Length: 204
Image 1: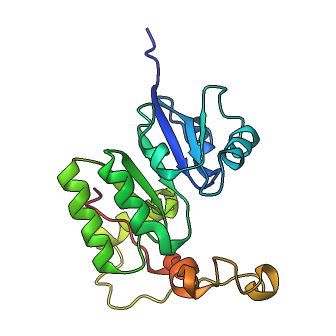
Image 2: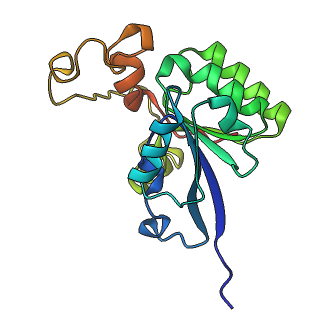
């Protein structure tokens, strides 16, 4: 008898569509992802519009408050997709509410904030991870395996480039979260993180 896949009920803090990709596209049949709720900092109406646009179940709840979202007992894990500058505070809100957590990259804007969140997640016994899906690409995992096995010898220096296809200021405007310093935007945290990141052998 084939067992039913485990259902993970997601709460979306701000909006993203990436996690809605069917797990079966990567040959995973033991889990399914369901959007159980979403919240917008401006209104529940915007959250409802998002839920409708992604085809969320009719039972999915729309909130106009992040506090209401993290208090929902039907939410197992929360995806934080707010601007970088807000990740730390929103992550603390979720962890203190007892929710597991997936945080859009970069997880925080500095190492001190990240360490505080790691400590809090351990205290609460909650899973927390930075959402950098390139860590899980088969090619990325294979390269890490080759390096770990020493097939390339001792690695002493690495060069990595990540380029954007156009002028982001012209494309998005200077207030866009990708380039706005007040939202922790810019080449290092928004784009350069792809060159800096590595697959952590000890995720929370």
